[in-house]
Length: 106
Image 1 (cartoon, rainbow, N blue to C red):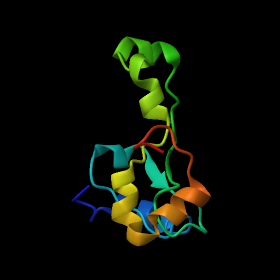
Image 2: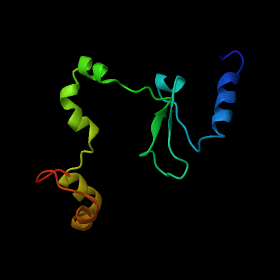
Image 3: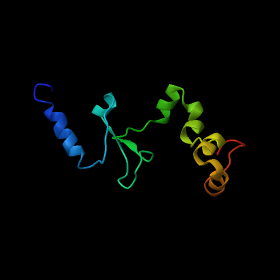
Image 4: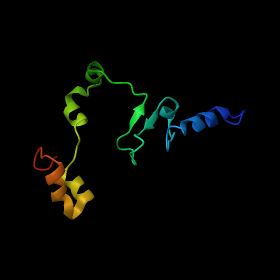
């Protein structure tokens, strides 16, 4: 690649810039897939890897993660996280946007 001035990468990045506002390649996964977000979104929170290969229940069972699915598949928001983000407005945010799962978990 170095011999031709990384022309393949330059072409690839130029083409990708037609579809993405920003992109980063910081490890080997960048060679095979890219993190993409909806165009109207200004952060990466609603993004996903593209292409995305789904994981099957069998694969989760084999990995030992099946026992932790509830924790892995549901948002994990604690009172401390909300207090850090919203300070004095935490109660208003919780009242309008969250349901309590336990005394400290939403």
